[in-house]
Image (cartoon, rainbow, N blue to C red):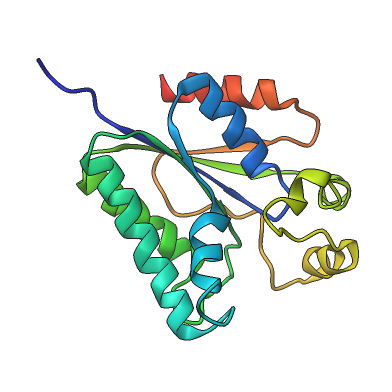
Length: 188
């Protein structure tokens, strides 16, 4: 009997766009395992100083290994990633290169990959960044800092990653349920 191909859904986008909210709803719908941006980062930053080369190098390695091993074991996963087309880690790895490499590693491990680029209008992002749910994982909640990000002309949040199966969803005026329906249709 042939084993079903594991699926990796990578939800990426700007701070406060709703990545984890959508991921949690999608997890309930599909039953996939969920790992979000802060899980590995928080583990590493509990030992290393935030933003250090060593810490960032470890985060990148742990993420790749964790996701590859899940796929190798036949586990379908939902992954969130805070993304900017212009961001470059202290290791020299750009966000586009990170997601392209992640795609290659997951597919080499046997996964069907689907990338979801969530986007929303700036005003909505400023409202969402203040949400109570953001406190649980020590996420950014500072409206002034979020405004700085949104005004930074070097920060490109609308350009999608250079990956194959990529669905762009502007969830400015969409319910979480409607976003999940779109993703579920794309997965099937």
